[in-house]
Length: 220
Image (cartoon, rainbow, N blue to C red; front, top):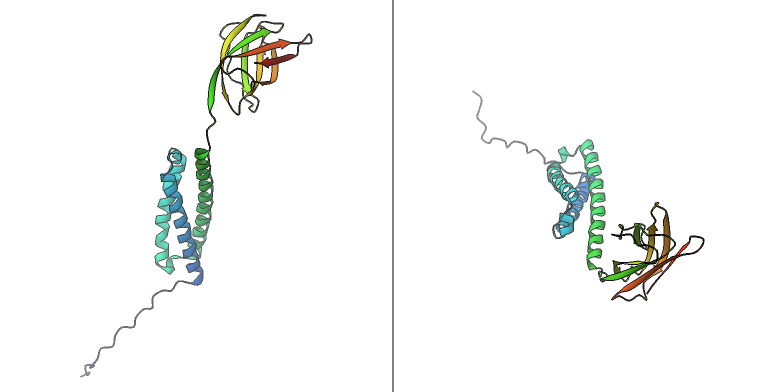
């Protein structure tokens, strides 16, 4: 008969897998990215203007889910195959780029909110037509803007007559360009009309034309 051994040998322990130096470096890079993402998410949640941006919020939620899903690869070095590591590096780079752009947008929102708003005042303006034609349309644009406003005239201003209008002034909008149009649609421009010395309780805008048809204007 075969003798029974007095001691049963213990099974050989399987060595735990060890993360390589490259895998450890990638894990650190991933954690740093995740921490940066969390900080940006906190800023977004504290910024109403950012929360109102549906595209930004949806992208943040998608990235948060992707970060949570990717975290499981760092529980076992065997899961970090070369292909997986390559994909994770690309994802980290893309997320870091997104974080950078989001932070710039948040900084701009903060800057805009901290900037003092220019005080504005609505001033009644009497427009005098001393040109050589009846005015069928009149639009104004701040000298620092490329956009003309809407037609301010309700009725035609005949030669030698005047009409009332209103302008909104700020410290940055005291110089205006004026566009007028006659019955046939011909346009005349009055550029750089300075209202800095005009009466804010009731300004007067004088529009005149030379014999050659050039426009010049003054405001008091």
